[in-house]
Figure 1 (cartoon, rainbow, N blue to C red):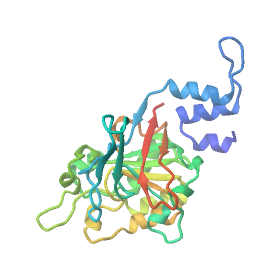
Figure 2 (cartoon, rainbow, N blue to C red):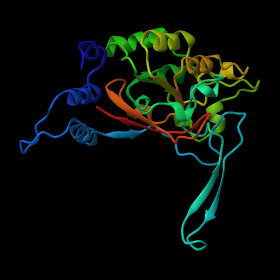
Figure 3 (tube, rainbow, N blue to C red):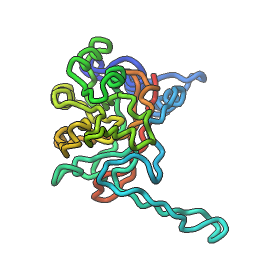
Figure 4 (cartoon, rainbow, N blue to C red):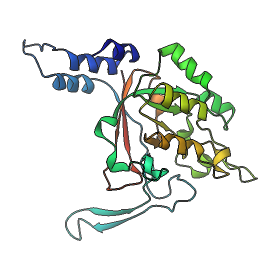
Length: 276
């Protein structure tokens, strides 16, 4: 492991895993387990947190999508086993948006590499600001305060925006928070922050708890310029994350997984954090 990587990586489980991969560790019996076996033992010893909502018909979703339908195809009494048919849009529940979702010619779900699915996790916590102002958008000052506490956001990180908006799940009306004039009020990212993260810190992906990258005041006008920016950087994002209040701001790992539909424009994801 180069000194450069060590400096750019905050302490905790991510640094520990890299150290294991770079050195031999003796077991109690004197043998030398393979680095991956030791990494597995290390990961199993830590707490895991599911950052994923269960999905079902009626859950909160983008205003333009139809609801999910689920029906049994076989049952234990008719066929001898249980199988269901699920019908839903790709962007359903906690889900991945690949570049192709907004960018013509961009990578589709099946083209996201496996090495892009294991990342150090950085959580920018603005839930207090959002509690006072549901239209709050994250600022560069919020990011600089994070870095003052934890050091630079590591290259290749997954940066999650904690707003605690997921606590409104599964109430779709509460998630959209639309006023009498039809304007939605929910928090979001900002272009200066996204540009800093993707262009300066070179992060690997980002995610949030709301249905959209852009705040509700923008999506009410069908303005999705921030989501267009993220996907235009050739990175994926995860929407409708959960349980960010259960993970630390720095030091955790995140595993992002999803099926591999050919030419897929999006799909439900399973996102897991491993705490330091």
